[in-house]
Structure formats: C-alpha cells, structure tokens
Length: 171
Image (cartoon, rainbow, N blue to C red; front, side, top):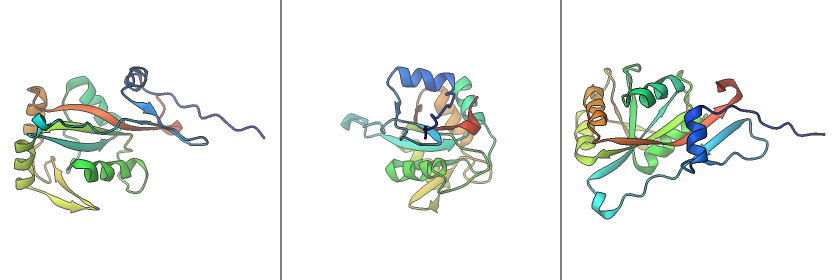
C-alpha cells in the first residue's frame, strides 16, 4: 500500500522564511498538516529590559500584521502571553488542545520592552492554563492602541515561531 504524500501549499512569507532558514520544517511522517518551527529568541544579558511575548492568530489577523506592522482590532480579548509557558499556551491552540473560532495557524513572538508589558499586566491579567495572559482588546486591558504604537515606533519587533498549515487552510 502506497503512503499518500502530504500536499500543502505554504503562504509566500512562510516559503521565504523556510528558505532563509528562519523556520524549520518539523513535520513528522504521516502528518495531516505541515509544521514550521523556530526556537524562541535567546535574549542576551544586555537585553534584560526586554520580554518575550506570544500571540496565536489566524491568517486574517496575521496578514494585517504582515502588511501594516499592526494588530487589527478584531477580537474582544486578544491574548498576549509571556515566556515559555505563554508560548506553550499559544501553541496549544494550534495543537488543538484549546479551541477558538479564528482558526489559528501561526504563533508570533514579540520582543517587547519589559516596562510596557509590566504596565499592561498591571492594568489587566488573568490566569490561563499554566500561564497568565493579558488581553489587548476592548473587553480586557484596552491596550491595543499602545501596543500598536510601540510596533510602529520599533519598540516591539516580531517574528513567526510556529506555523501549522493544513490542507483545509491551503491558500
């Protein structure tokens, strides 16, 4: 019996990141989705004033970030998490351990000023399955405008750290 080969079309930015070595194909044999992975950024000692934050998002939200360097005001909560436990929490949405109706395909890492993130968490935070999240949206911390301003000013940078691209999401 012949094994079927997974045929998934990656998005152009995903192909570019894969070819540049910024993402690695970690798809296991027989998988129904293609998985692209990058390790978390290792912050240097002189970058102690920086914090790694993570957000899971679907293609529509990510395309806005890619095109405008801004997060759209599309979800009422808009989860932002910190550290490895926050990354694991965001990845659980792609691994189908958690569910949202936005069809997440991508986990984005944001390198952010620690003081800004501390300010956000002092405004609003909640405990979530092994991490503490902050909601950027209008039903939570209402900090999305400040986050987007910091993105535009270059105080926050970002990169993709996980992609799950299945046949049903092929573009």
